[in-house]
Amino acid sequence: MPEGDTVFRQAAVLHAALGGKVLTSSDFRVPSYATVDLSGRTVERVIARGKHLLMQFGDLTVQSHLKMEGTWHVYPRDEQGGRPRWRRPAHTARCVLRTRDQEAVGFSLGELSVLSPAEETERLAHLGPDLLGPDWDAAEATRRLLSAPQRSIGVALLDQRNLAGVGNVFRSEICFLAGILPTRPVAEVANLARVIELSEKLLTVNRLRIRRCTTANPTAGPPYWVYGRGGKPCMRCGTRVRKSELGEAELRKAAVADRVIYFCPSCQS
Image 1 (cartoon, one colour):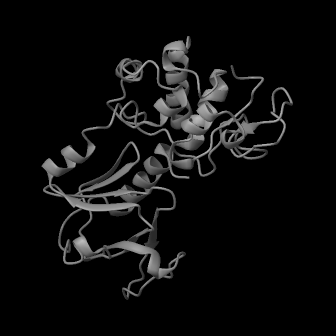
Image 2: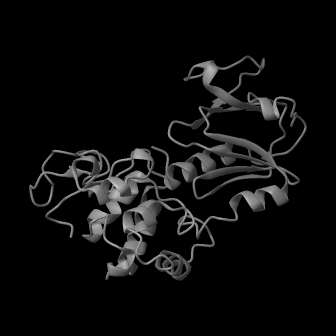
């Protein structure tokens, strides 16, 4: 599931492949931008902003959001300019950007837009401090979380207006490591600073990992403490991990967009 760490990593790969290079062709496979031609333009930089991926060309930006299944792949092109073999079905490609020696393909993108600088600013204006960005501001993230004190912490963490980059996996893991139930109101989270610290730490340590991990060992064993472990013993206390659709109505409410929340009823309170 793409979250801020995944988008950061993909932006780094795309920047290494395309940054400073001139596009030889572009192919936007969405009706709104089917006629857009970026050939001859130079990719200035590729960056992540929360869960948004931005390819900046100076006077315009190609903005994409991976949502649940999106991804970008980079393929080397041979000297004859032959098409490389893609690792995903061609019908799922939404954007193809080519340079002389590289081909970047966006598959199953949840969002794809070509924006002016003003439109880019407007599109991202709602985002809170970026956990992996140069503007990360823990104090501002705290202020935003506390602006809705009765909101469940599990819902508040997923709201990109509070802090940008946390998704469903990290939301469950942050609450577990902080020892709080995702249903606890923000105002009743005594260790809110710890929650924010964990959010920044988990995304930072995972931003360049191929295998995301919140436990001690990124190369072996279960990668998560509770996420995806519904019905299995908690790795700390042995109590069976629960997920929200098996819990109370408030937990089901906290599962935004039908995404489940995993938690240990013994380790979290």
